Image 1: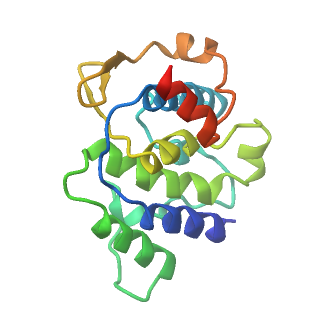
Image 2: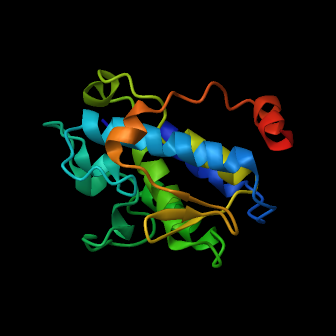
Image 3: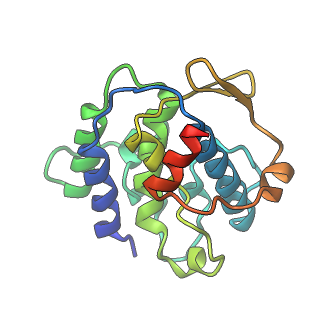
Length: 193
């Protein structure tokens, strides 16, 4: 039911990143805007009543054979069940190790979106998710982190460390055209224009 290989792949991708904030670039803003658009699509498709872009869409996935208490990262949720300890669930052990490895100066939202990316990857291939044809929800944020991006939210805005953008309504986020490409050359072009 849970795609452990996809979850491990996201964990390894996050594990190997150079987490030093480099600067604020136009590509960082474009990547967050694409995440905001994809988040609106996912929450609407999954029937969520909370269309906030800052939620865990894995929690909205409903399938008769799916127990949300075993989706990777479950021990880090506010309603976490008691965890028996190392060795009980190797995937969860790796999630906990990743959480410890993430930089302490991360914003809480960056840390949380890393956890959500692992959770989403583990469910993305379920038929109940696949039937909506959703693009990989967290790919824009993973690319942002790979490019040295950093952000936090404050009063309905996304702050990139000097540059701020407003978070539009879900309706406006749904109307945005999709980002054409995440290829490094395309993003580099955005940064020099």
